[in-house]
Image (cartoon, rainbow, N blue to C red; front, side, top):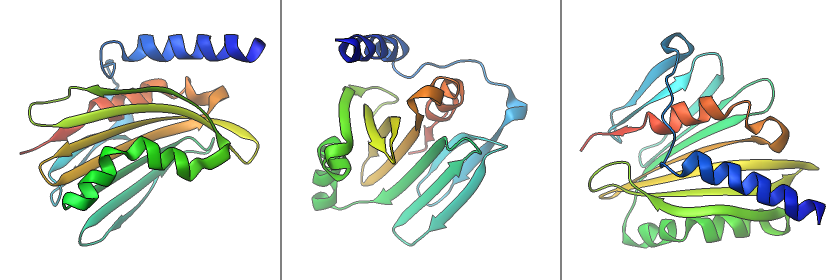
Length: 177
């Protein structure tokens, strides 16, 4: 019973946060740097003080940002063909399968609007990783044959202390057509 009440409280908070799509909050410009990727035509804000690793292959771009408390932001961009596009249509299903028995609950899964001609989905889930409960927010964006995915996550205990940062990154996404 206690577990159900906690999930309901958590779900209601998540729903309120995203009832107006991704919450845009004023950000301190000094805390962020503008990142631009010419190959996949997107820009977004990144927290300045977080460690950044990136890999840029011909067909895929991956960037991982992390801080000392194990909060993490991942950005993926890729050109996709029809078969790969179908796979991304069921992203939450195969992502959840990859987590396997560690998946606790998918808190929210819905289509959102971030721009004309851009298909976007928001997925929020909770899972266990090395005896820690993780809360992850995933934004999947598709424009023509390009997929851009932003994942933000941390332990459930610290997730909401990073919520403004996660919101700033996700809501700053600009896809240039």
